[in-house]
Every structure is written in C-alpha cells, then in structure tokens.
Length: 259
Image (cartoon, rainbow, N blue to C red; front, side, top):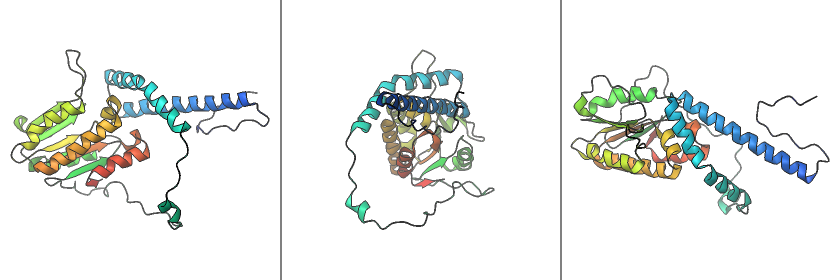
C-alpha cells in the first residue's frame, strides 16, 4: 500500500539498509518538496495581500529570474566549513527561563500612536490595517503625505495638493516599477520641503521580491535617516511572514519603534 501523503512537511527518515544512492535520492526529494512548499506559501502570501493577477505574474517572474543565484548561494552555504562558536557564546551562562516577548500591537480600542517629526514606526501585520489607522490619525500633523504603495490608500480630509503618490505599479508604456533609487529621488522633495512629510510605505514585500533584500534594507536605512534629518516621519506596514526570522529582525532594528 502506498504511503499516505504528509501535510506537515517533516522529512521522512530513510529506511534501514538503504543504499547511498537511495539516501541521496531521498535527500534530493525532501529538498525539492520543501522548495515547492516554500514557493506556494510565498504565492499564497502575495494573494492574501490583495495583489492583482498582473502583479502576481510580475512577482513570480522576478523570483524565477533569481532562482539560479539563490540556489548557488544555498549550495555555497551548505558546502562551507562550519562556523566556530565565539568565546562570548561559550561563556554565556545558560538560560533556563524563556525570555519575555512583548505582545505585538496595542490592546484593542487603544488610540493610534502619534508619530512625531524625525520618528519612524514599523507595523507588523498581514495586511495594511493598523498602519492605515496610524496614517489617517497623523496625516494632519504634517504639511504633506507621501504614499509609496502598489494600491495607494485613501486618506480622508487630505487635500490633493498635500498628497504625494508614488505608485509601484508598472507604467502604461511598458516601463517597470520604480527602483529604490528612483523612489528615493522622488521622496527628497517632499521630505526636504518646509515642515517635512509623513512618508507611508506598505509594499516592502514587493520591493524585496522585485529587488534584492540588501538593496531594500539600504533604501529603508536611507529613508529612516532622511526623515530624521528633515523633521519628517516614516510609517511602514510589513508582513513579517514574507521574510526569514533573521532578515525580519534586521529590518526591525532599523526602526525606532515597532508595533
């Protein structure tokens, strides 16, 4: 009787007495299975964010173009010699109790936090919701609001002359979406004008897929410094499931506050 399909993705240990060729095939099949699972999870995540079919196609094509590079990086990381532990980790006393982790987000019904000039706030959420509340609550505190998004949200009471919209959708003439460098150029004027600007970004997942993670992190580092130096403010909505834990941690460390 054939073995029942697995749903948890846990690797199946090779049967006893299996040959080296069989063990190699089992390892290869397990890696192939995990790759397919990861790709499908990523597509489902983009669908949950509300991307259109055209945007999904662009995201998938961009990811396909980088597969060879990612596979090569993975192969080099697996064949590299193991890293030696540092003295600080060897001398660190053992931890018996689980560290306290702050709850994500404020209690229900709490008013949206205020973002003062020079401040930056990252909101971890699957879809832009809490960040939109913060955006609408703080939009009146700045002369202008710059919105970087695939689907720029409406901000009630915001006059058109105070709204700076940077759409990440492809241009009608067949041109691709703006790069982080081009977005930076468009954000200089509103943030450096008198009174600064409230900058809202809710498309980091798209930027990390369309570009590299390191390039996106450099863009965010620049943007955090830009709002600090110009008296502006930065608000970012981000789905932490779209990145590995260590990469999401790198992103969170850039911001002054995480909600």
